[in-house]
Length: 206
Image (tube, rainbow, N blue to C red; front, side):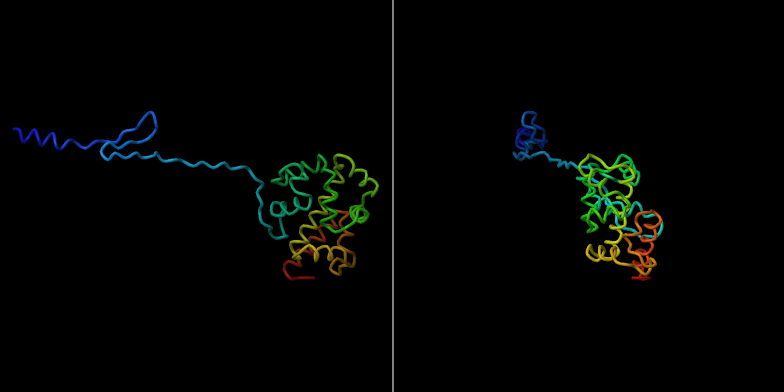
């Protein structure tokens, strides 16, 4: 009987681990160790403008060309908004693009204010006045977008900015002789330039 009692006293049942309410730590009584509870790392993500890749020039390409066009217009810092879709861009054009877009497009195309006015069939004096005001008119915004679209496509398909701006300013046999920039004053002319750029992309013309 005494031996049985001794066995019971010398071999107590295994202790279980509990949690300390004061320190928030798990204490294992059987081993005398304190184990920190697992920590969960959290990350904060911020919404950003999606940047799709450039797609083929033939067919519906608005979604693919949009990021490049937005960059030519000055990007979010100049536009003051994140343009994710063609509907976003359409709304911005209707409201009137910020006047800083004029400088951005001129720099991207490598042209002067006088050349810009001639290319878009706008008054140079009107553009100069708009540069001192808050926003451009809807018509001016639409034509600046048209030029930015052509410049973005030219840079992408011709490989670099210098080659693209040079190509836009030179007479083009595939267009029947005029310079590409001379045709952007109308949407139909801009589409002709886009078609030639598409053929260049597939090795059809130079």
